[in-house]
Length: 135
Image (cartoon, rainbow, N blue to C red; front, side, top):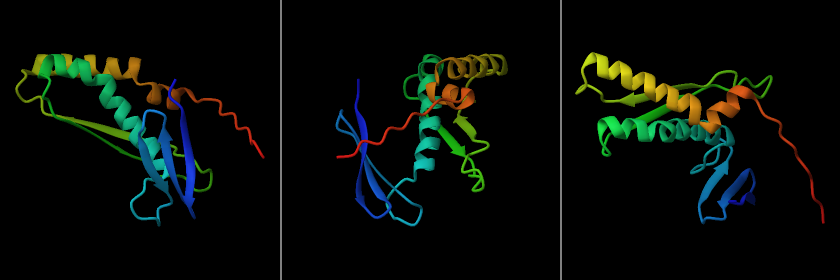
């Protein structure tokens, strides 16, 4: 299993790490060159949507198809939640006839609904357990 952790690198600044060698800079909105935790949540959702539909779309559009998944949502600062996240999957399906395009969209939506773990988790809710380990 991949280990994940964040390490503080300065005031309101952290680096996220993966045991597979990946890293990402994380911080508050006023820190340049970082993602906020909320932005990472939204990016995770968009990436999951793209990856969940990738095989389905590549099968019909070819391996070199272009896709962009845009995601947005404003935090409610009173509750410190994102009450709504909106995604738009941008695809060029102009080469398909209307019936084939509609079938592809239905199959892609099913693949996303079935396989996007991040989206499924957000929709279902989850339990988060925090332990504080002190030296």
